[in-house]
View (spheres, rainbow, N blue to C red):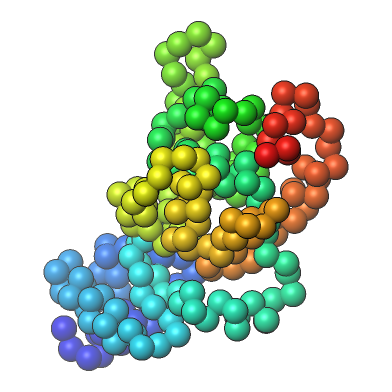
Length: 225
């Protein structure tokens, strides 16, 4: 592929609002362009941008340019929004779903050893990270939770096999291991700070509302933990 067509692909990726698939990129050209040629150009672009503040990554829904994590502290100064904060309960629940999916709410509670607050599940669903994909064939037919493509995209992962390997099966250790993939995670903090790589998401309102609501007796272990 000549330099002009390579620039076309590079420009399309830089200007795209959403990740682009190889099929999307082939539509840039009138002439027939093979997927092999597109993949070769993508590999060349990744190498060409290795020493820059942006990088070309392959995620679940396609290819996109994004800022490197090393640039985050500088880019954060351009946005006045505070980074979203999630409790330990939220991070542990997300980690369990990510590594054990599909899983029911009862199974999550069994692994964590405490009740899972409705607010915890709401935050994860509102964020678009988890969803109910079916129901388990047992008494009550509880919902089966799994992660979404949005979860993979936000963590810059291609598929679930790209999740970091677990060194410890404990929920908190899993949460820390998951956090190391994309987010700033401080296990010593009272509230873990979660910063999504692409943008500061407006979740403060959800978190504030959750804090103001009365928590059922069965959910108190989450807050005490």
